[in-house]
Image 1 (cartoon, rainbow, N blue to C red):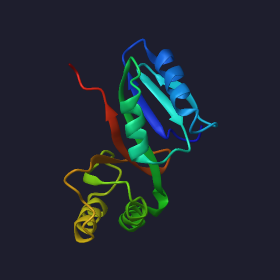
Image 2 (tube, one colour):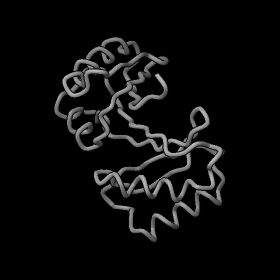
Image 3 (tube, rainbow, N blue to C red):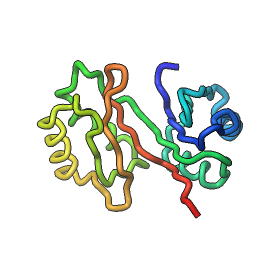
Image 4 (cartoon, rainbow, N blue to C red):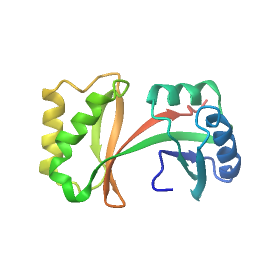
Length: 157
């Protein structure tokens, strides 16, 4: 797997069960879905499903016991082209009609503050921030900048 489309946090010790149930849940929509356990309480899923609203809805409609949080990650740009991040990310957001962003946080300090501030300024200028959107994170994984957002969380009773 090149990268995780979805990263799932599970209850400790429930990784195998959640992995199998998640693969079963996504298989009818993506016959090539695959996954693996990447650590305690962490699962990596590779899927071609990109519709954020659909993924959020399917995890809400079909609860999986032991699943806590589902995050989706998308590569935006190579680290060597970091100065182009504001333009590339805005282009990506505009092309993804279902992606609503409330806030972007800089998870990786390897993303220079001046580039991050330029991105925030451009997002406001383009009116791409939405009060009902997702809180997202910019992080660097394997020399690529990823946009990561939480699409589902099990609420504690």
